[in-house]
Length: 187
Image 1 (tube, rainbow, N blue to C red):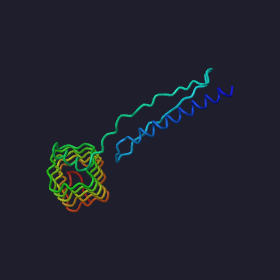
Image 2 (image 1 turned 90 degrees about the vertical axis):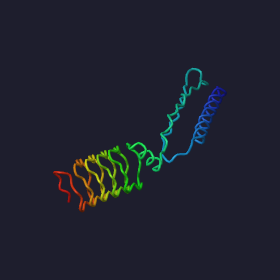
Image 3 (image 1 turned 180 degrees about the vertical axis):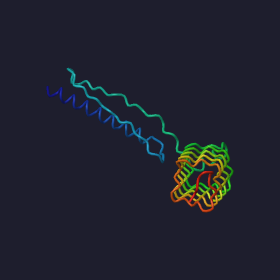
Image 4 (image 1 turned 45 degrees about the vertical axis):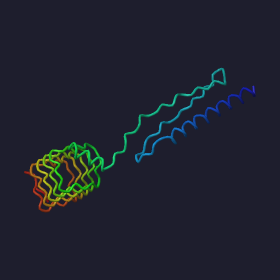
């Protein structure tokens, strides 16, 4: 009887060591990334059926590879080539005097972006994060800024004629000399 228990414990210990080694080596071999990824959990199930030496392990499933981390510079190149960068990160980019007329930047992160004197006529900025962005003297006529975050943005002397600013957060924004959309009074 003692040999049977010892054999079961030995099998269990060997299985545990094997699973731990596989997990460690699979993590060591992974490429490094800036983003945090979720590691699949490893579940080991030990059954105590009539035969005490039987150990069943569930297969380790692998997650699909995480999306590559794309740099701001790569996103800027993509934007300039395609006039589109939906949901991308352009945080801190310098896009001064750029022509982005009719570009699609929906849900993009444009935090602290320099868009001074940029042409954003007809651009889709719905849900974009423009917190702290410099939009001074920018042409934003007919742009869609609905739901955009313009907290602390510089909109001094910007032209917002015909822009959709419904639901936009303009708290702390500098609107001095800005041309407001019809029906809105900017303060």
